[in-house]
Length: 182
Image 1 (tube, helix red, strand yellow):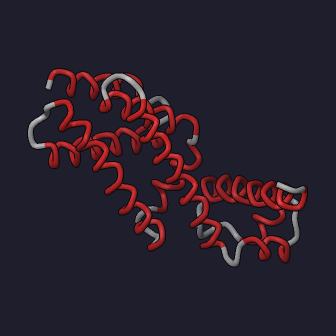
Image 2 (spheres, helix red, strand yellow):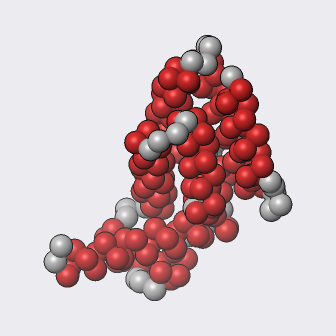
Image 3 (cartoon, helix red, strand yellow):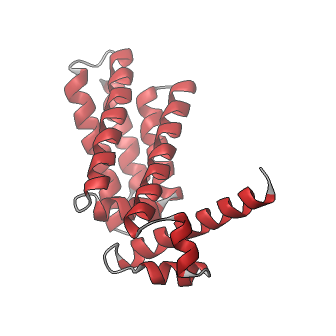
């Protein structure tokens, strides 16, 4: 990667980081493209060289976030131990590491057509991985259990993001125990 490409990638990453922070803090609708440019320390015109709109910024934030989820799920399948347990633990780890992203995702997922489409794709992908883990664990009704486990993890995530003192590690452990018992 030459210096120009490096600088371009740094600027894109800075814009995405600033946009994510502002969207999570102020909300998507309340955040202007001008505010994003100003907080990133670049001109509005330069921002438009990278992203045509605020929606395009949001789309890229979610594509990268969803990619993180997919990479984590792949690592879960490559590691030893219960796939179900690894999935739950890795989800908790991602929630803690990328809390701003998850807050934004949970706050906007019912408002944006782009986000709903990405969420539908992500849900299908995650449920397929969960189902595979359930089949390997010999859990009956793996299709329905995958939906139940996905909803449980999603609910756990939602409460963690809403409540500062939510005992996510304890809830995750309890959920893991449910599937260890079968």
